[in-house]
Length: 111
Figure 1 (tube, rainbow, N blue to C red):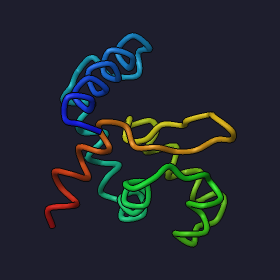
Figure 2 (tube, one colour; figure 1 turned 90 degrees about the vertical axis):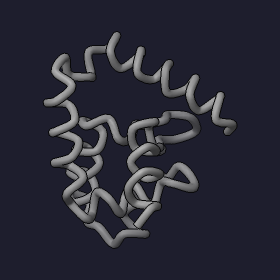
Figure 3 (tube, rainbow, N blue to C red; figure 1 turned 30 degrees about the vertical axis):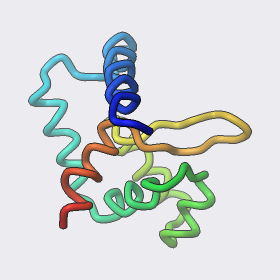
């Protein structure tokens, strides 16, 4: 994906999240919730697992050695903070959102 395509996807995604009421009005609260979610190493590892490709619940559970409840809880936390989203095409897969990609590029990949 070119930088222009990535910027367009981000803009479209932010507009969609605002329209759907998923983004908090107070951006400080929105960022706090996201940072709080990303303090958990399991959630950061889920994001790392999704950097190169989308994955199903089963793939995430297997790769990270998580139980059903651990995987579900952490995926819900990442979805609620808009770091990942479900993609439903030929099954249910999890993908990074522009926010999740930004975190990986600006924080995790620079370590």
